[in-house]
Length: 407
Image 1 (cartoon, helix red, strand yellow):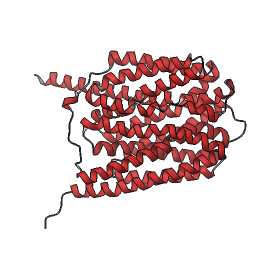
Image 2: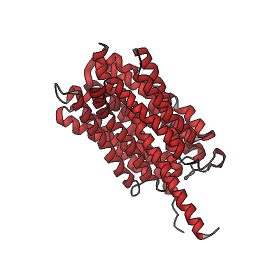
Image 3: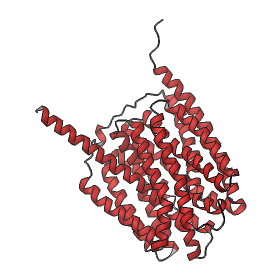
Image 4: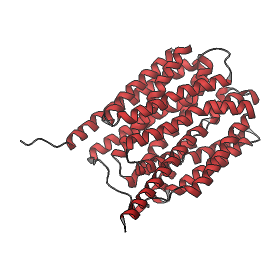
């Protein structure tokens, strides 16, 4: 094979790699966007159906976490690319069904279906990103920014679509976008680089069985606590802004302010993607945990414009820790197992979304968002303790890997 032919193949492979990552970044944005349509639409539905916010928010689906497990298993054993095709078309069809739902029962069914297909992305897409990335920190950080942009834009775009086309249009337009993207991905998406049997079974850093078990338990605690904080703040944010920033503000302004708060998470992830190249990820993880706990406590006592600053600070920590968390898992997990490991991580993280929704409904009815945020701060303390413990154990492992001076 000539040098020019080899160079052409290398360029073609690199283009395919970048195109694949581009589709995964877009999928991450869509994934978070579609899940957060309902928490904004629910404000309009309260007037349409004459039901309370506490009652309607309970329709938010927990299937987003439940179906992460089979998705991760299928990704490791079957085809990650085919699952991404199912993600695009499944989300799109579910959104169209929600748009035309004739009753709350049918709407709840469509939301459950949406959560089922949306659950595919995190265990499968994250494993694909890690597999294809050359610079993991920056690639994961930018992928996280794309997901954060989906979160950030969801409230604002959903509010605008609701104002222009009604709440049904807020579901229909993104549904059409998902279906169209699925068709394009089938046509242009690169083939799968590795089959299940060819994936590496050796992690970047080998842990002893005891340390591996301890760190695994700590990551479960992180997934539970960080997941509860993430879901509580994300789902409740539009209503927190509506209740505590000022009286009489429009749904459009609520959506805009919510979007601005979420965008702070995107800025944080870009920063974290660079910092992780200079600071050991386990140390950075502990620092972000301190920042998150402080932010939630601050938000619990703030109101008005100060509340927006406190929420922005909190959101920066919430999304910053996601990037570092995924990097740490990738560092200690072999590629052949990553789909299942990420599946367990996101299963726990997103399954507690049901608990978060129930917690919001119960606590909001008893003491408003002051009580909701106060309890969330207690949960954030659990994440802080686990993150510091992970940093201590990981620091010992990393020091043991360094060359020892000769005696």
